[in-house]
Image (cartoon, rainbow, N blue to C red; front, side, top):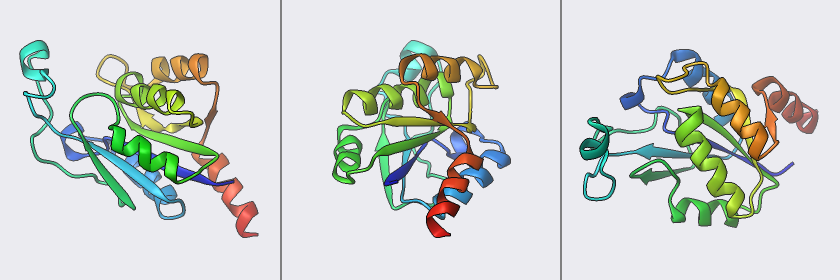
Length: 162
């Protein structure tokens, strides 16, 4: 199956747990990988004015990738979506930080772009509202239906390699 991994905002600003970084790195070493890095620019997205906090103005992904896209706000950029469409993949495996916000926003954008977003449920962390990410997983299942786990992805890769 032609697929790409999209790592959403796994960067120092959001203090991801080491198990998440390690788990995503296992997949990113085997699958073409795209990452988003959220940076603050108050002129683009009014985090400070409206929410009283903001991501760092400078940061980098903690996941090695084939392509890095900088974003300002919750959703992926038009450039990222165009790149993913050019990859001509059957599905986009999505993992990352804030399952019910930034990860879900990526899912909506991918879906609207005609791609098949598939959440890797055990490689995602929710926001401070729900660190388990279960709210985001439930919303993902409701809106997009497609979920998997790291073990299922690795088993599929083993079949291809075998």
